[in-house]
Image (cartoon, rainbow, N blue to C red; front, top):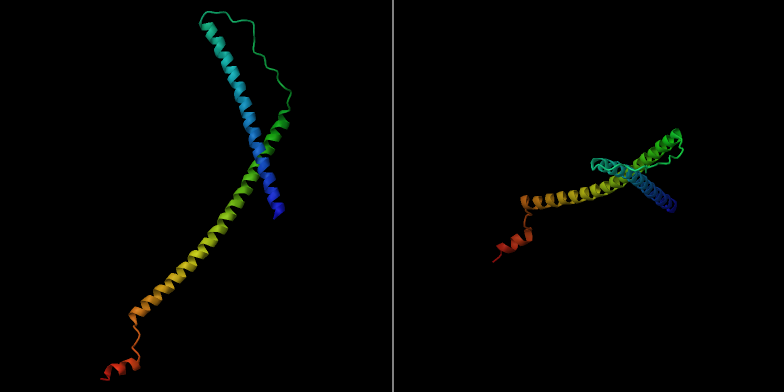
Length: 142
């Protein structure tokens, strides 16, 4: 049980770190796009106002990457995330099924007791008990 809790904690931590990494990469990419867009807008504005553009250029230094390796890493990350989500879904579904089974058993017990009470109440009203003979005789005596 303790080992399972530790594994769950590690999995949650890995998931949080992966989400944080994805947000940071998305943020970096968004900032890069924003810089290029702003630079192009600035150049277009200067041209439209009749100013000459300076010789200053926006330069990017590309990092050498291995596209095959990057794609393999991306595929592996996606597969790991899908596996984690499936496992989380399986655990959640199992917990919900257990809860449902317990609730259903409780409801069935309640329903059975209620039906039994209704049957007893209806049988006592349809078949009133006969008065005992001792009380009948006592009513006849003056």
